[in-house]
Every structure is written in C-alpha cells, then in structure tokens.
Image (cartoon, rainbow, N blue to C red; front, side, top):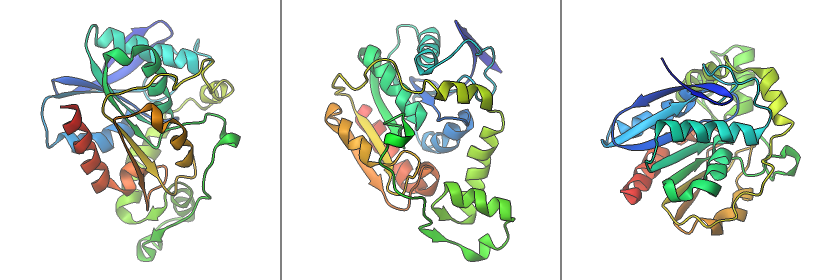
Length: 268
C-alpha cells in the first residue's frame, strides 16, 4: 500500500500504468474504487497513461486527516499530494461529483500545469438548497431482477440509480456502496459545514480539452447549473445523457467509455 504524507493528512493512493499522469478524484463518501471501476476499462484499450487513484481525506484508507476543517483545506491536501507525486510534471484531472469541485479549485491556481480535465456529474453549487435538480425517478427497471432483492436493497438502489437492472446494481454495490463503508461520517459532516471554498472559482478561462458528463436524471447535483460555467471552457465537450442519474459512469457505461476515449484523443 502506498501513502503520501502531506501537511494535514496521510493520503492513500494507487498508481497503475506509465506515461502521462491522470489524477482521479472521487466524490463525497466513497473512495478510489469508484473511479477505478469506471476508468480502468477505458485504459484496457490504450497505453501511455499513468493513472493515480487517491482516497480523499475522511474516505477510504487515508489517515491522519483530523486537522482538515473545510473544503479549502481538503483542496490544499490534494494539491500538496499532486505536487509531491508529480513535481514539475504536467497532468490531467478527472473529478466525479465533489471531486469535480476540487478540480475547479486546482484549476484556479495551477491551470498552466494541467493538460485537460473531465467532470463526471460534477458538483457545481455546494449549497444543496441552491441547486437546480430534478426529482429522483426510475427511468427503467428489470422487474424480474428486482423481485430477487431484499426490501433494503430495493430501497437503496431506487434512491441512487435511475436504471434498475442487474448490471447497474452489481456495479453500484461493488464500486459505490463498498467504497462508502470506510467513510468517516462525523468528519464528513464537519466538512459539509464549510463545504464551499472561501474564494470564487471559475474566474479563469481554461482552454485545454475538457469533458463534462451530466446526467439528465441526476437528482443529487443536477445538470442545469453547469450551464453557468460552460463559457469558461471553450474546448469542452458538454454532454447531457438520458437514462443517467448521479451514477452516470455506471448507467451509461458504453457512452462513458466512448466519450472518455474521444477526450483522450483530443488531449493527445
């Protein structure tokens, strides 16, 4: 197991492959397995990329993070890790949900070092009450499969997925639910009290290849709020996918893979 000691945390990370570095930042509560589950199939078909998966403080195997009190300090820990692992190197960032918010924070100061970025169901507005989101709904369901589930399983899947079938539920269980088990709930609740950065983001225009993947049925962060920052990304593919909630990378896996390949082609 690999750890990187930064000022306010001991961050767990995994490195797979060699080549151009890509740092993967997962969302709030899970760990690196969420990103590994959706990104590794992409790289099964292409070489020349060094994937760096990390566990954000308070999640996964990362330790010694108690002195982190807000998103500003969470961001500082991630930046310190990147500069330690990739001194004087240029890199790409992929952020899912809260990880996408952190990517925008990194971009504010270190856009010159970045070669591009992808945002998967990104958190745009930290304040939950201020977001524009659709109601949670089920778009399609395999009733035969659902009849095999327990009441608790059905309730959990129905709250977080919009396409209920065996494939999606299996991946959600292994990549999201299993990844949430190690979350420090008390710590995460503390961070949510200072969830917004203390500074404005999206002030600069980032003209490197980017990709926004948004779920039409994402009831967690929505998709409409992302339109407000689209003009700041002149080289961004901006995609809103139907039959996709906050776990778009699972529910639209084929399109996810295709769009990721297209983004990497643009970066190359």
